[in-house]
Image 1 (cartoon, rainbow, N blue to C red):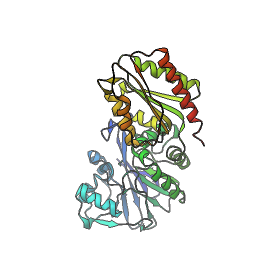
Image 2: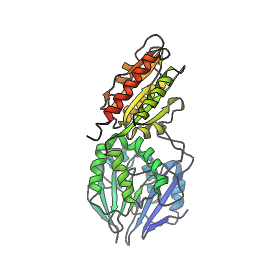
Image 3: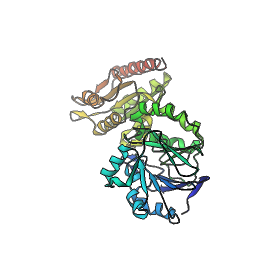
Length: 390
Ligand code: FEO
């Protein structure tokens, strides 16, 4: 494969992984993913920015087969999907130095056993000259590890952002198109970035000082529509949640399903957007994406023996891990003879800074009085949502 020219002296070495089906052994990848490295060639020095997952190292080396020398390997992030092939690159180019921040150096030494003398440490704002190409390093910690950083190529206004602004999308096209990249970016944001929204807010302000012509992430296509990318990140990370409720549910004999359907109907009648997700077909990515902008999360669960259904427990744990910006939560469901489903779910979501709205737990099949409680819950959610913009 040949490096793909993006602009003069800047090349994409995208390693597509079309048939990868899970990321982090957690999030389904309906469109695969990619690990992107980039080459920046100055008149004096050549830098490789990031590498690839070692499972796909052969593709990276195919790109590099005609590359006589690499002087620097810039590592933005120590996670192995970007750094895992660095030891192999160093074997091929033993004179190369790994350029990174001190925290990333520490991680690369512990995760990949790289020796200390292979590194050049750079500070926030420091520059590295390649000859007509100036790399500026921008610390952007916690997107999504503590050592993450970006590189800005001054002459060409390229931002190499690694995971930041990435998309789970294996694609042949070099540049992103908005309608194709939106959902893969949201799926990526939901799993990886959502817990770090406050950090992202600060980084978006910091990056606002740079004129950016290209955003070059290490997953998915290159972005030329920089405003589109920054706007959706502001929406997901900074904006208030939307007038939307997510109902994640599972039902054993249909009673919880009746409650869920009643709640959906009443919420929609009240003008609340609803996303209803059956945990029987659990897609962690779909659940995570739904959580990005919802103001309310409702867990619908029957009582299995003495507690919530295990799939409802898993969904609650996932939501707690991802720390969505929801303001309200509730639990609805049915039980046969007793149990502590509500208390168990409530105990699983301490990270959610959300008000708990009165749960509705019903003995057996819902009667009219039970459905009336659902109507009250729907009315309360709709009323609460009127305060969102305040
Ligand atoms: Fe794409 Fe955090 O690695």
